[in-house]
Image 1 (spheres, one colour):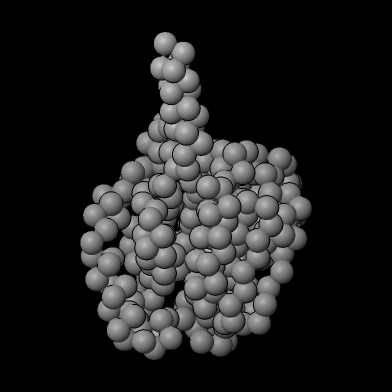
Image 2 (tube, helix red, strand yellow):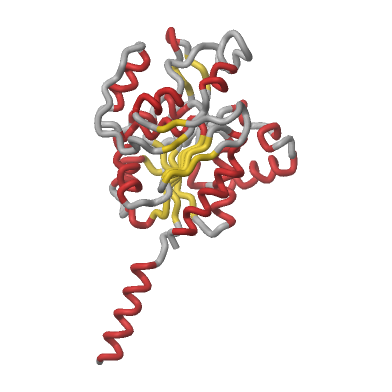
Length: 278
């Protein structure tokens, strides 16, 4: 009898210590970004920012679980659908596109409210890729704010790349009031931000301005505010590197990356952080 009890105790202990192998991957439900003066620009997730980390996670034995605010299939930013963003390596680009086509969960993701009702202990970490779409919905989504606060409280890797970093604002007490104030040029009130004082990075003002009228004009308009500035106003210790160069910042459980060129380094740092939790 004692042997049986001891065996059960060991089994329960091993089970309790087992590291979850699922990674929650949150994408925007939007296929556009609304700019100043009501200009609307088509967008979505950035292919390399999603798939380079996802490929690395799968190869390391993790299972990506996809979710969007509305539970709809996310859109890809068409500008990202090119070998250019993979160092011009056509073979690497085609491998990524092939893998993308196998991700059935991406075509039918969970809604964030569904994820919120799940047992969150099954997830080893959370990741948010960029593209301009998170600037439209993720930054004010209450369900995402709840989930990020959970991963923060449980000290689980929380990784966001490029414009994905703006999703951190969802943990503010009133992210809509904060972003509305920024959009109108007012000084926002900052209350109860989970990541107050954290070191972080995001797509930089200089990089964003290059895409606005007056330079490349890839956006066709002006953003309502710049992500790095918004995170700084919220209370983040924001650093940015050179334009279009890899720059990744890790502070405790939080991992942030500046731009698409950071995807490989970002993946390495995320996998390292996940490995520390084993």
